[in-house]
Length: 141
Image (cartoon, rainbow, N blue to C red):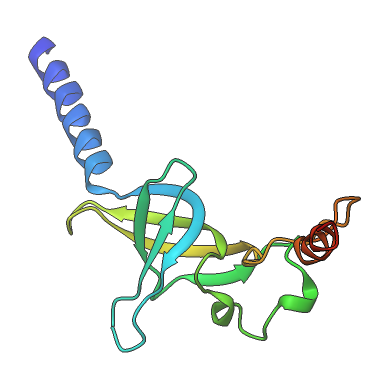
């Protein structure tokens, strides 16, 4: 009786361990897109760089791409996937495929923010512009 109870407990533990290890791991990572998927490829790899500099790639072939509620309405496109581009900030929810090299298979891509302006905004201050300063200095001769 004692051995049969021990056998049942060990079998149950072994069965639960095998179920837990056979599943996939779900993860969420956020950052800016550094490389887009190739258009002709069956596997569409999206490379995302986080704030710590780490780059993760996820297959977005079967992912749902959508906009965050705070994304500006004027910059939205009909298909959210068309807005994916370099330097766009995204949050990716993906499952890590433990069977196939641990690759991330995205289930959802949330577009958080549009591309930051490449040109810094001009600050209007009391300082003269360089061309005006040169004209003023040339008059002092």
